[in-house]
Image 1 (tube, rainbow, N blue to C red):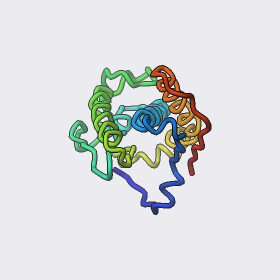
Image 2 (cartoon, rainbow, N blue to C red):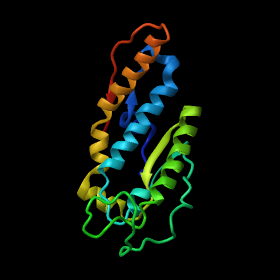
Image 3 (cartoon, one colour):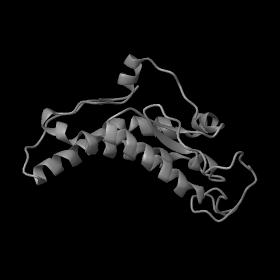
Image 4 (spheres, rainbow, N blue to C red):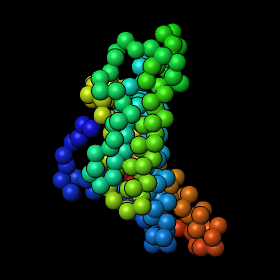
Length: 178
């Protein structure tokens, strides 16, 4: 997985959620909602040719390496197939499209582990050409720009849950990205 090293202070500035006291009991729900929506935003912004890049988008918890056993050792840039992720139907669907389901299982495991322990999570691509695609398509940059809205929706969901359980409503949020 391609990584970027940041200091603890930089990390705190990248993805921040300030949780109102009345929602502290909902931390797992907040984390899950925000993390899965961020992942979905990246997925939807990722261009698809063979499907390999999309299938290489994984999540891991607490610095662990995600499993890439669902991916072949090398990508065939000429691969074609009948997967479901192709945006341009001129050449047919991507050969690696069916691998996306296996990638989603790895992501689900990473998110569940992170949420269960309230530990840091990494979402990233393992494909070696991901940075080149990001430089042109901006799928991660665009998703990161949505972080304040993602957090607001997660907080609204938690507030609704608390209200539905007879709890009080909540107040403000500060979410930030760098």
